[in-house]
Image 1: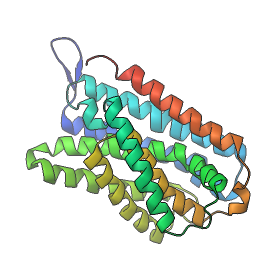
Image 2 (image 1 turned 90 degrees about the vertical axis):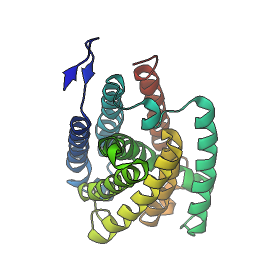
Image 3 (image 1 turned 60 degrees about the vertical axis):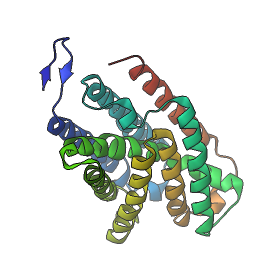
Image 4 (image 1 turned 45 degrees about the vertical axis):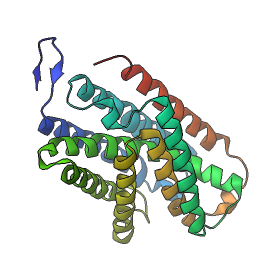
Length: 260
């Protein structure tokens, strides 16, 4: 790491990837300590779920990940557009497309329930985690992986980014409660990670990727949950989703406003 003539930090591609991987490991460790170690998804402890969501996924997976991306953007190594932060019009169009495509894939898989309240509750339950997954695994690690391998050419570097993010996405589930930490599901989730990676690097837009990925996660979580537990609107789950969106938008706007 060095500083340019204006005193800003300058990171080499290898250093950026190393820092990104450190954030990934820190986030994975926090996930294990707060969720996997205590089998939180099985116990369903509401206080534990809130603690896990706030510390692992909001503070580390969202705020810290965005802060590190901001450092890399200011260093001039990676643009905010490469991280997936696009103009409002492109974001809106991408969001609509992601919602329609994600919903279609979800419905075609014949989920346990299509009750709008059940779907909304489960969607909200996984949203905070999905946001951290996209920011840490794809926008931070995946994009820095692409940056490091730019000399290989555009397509090969994108393949490296997708492969790196997909493998790390699957591996991160070792830190989760059963059944998501089993080998069969880790391999399946790695494949789902490839689908998310292709979407992200083709569209290159953060918000739509979160929505698309959340629909993929929605089906898996619903298959391992009892829809009867989600038949009434859950204020905690819905509130946490709103807070996640607010934290993401406010932090992103604050850190990435102006020029580097």
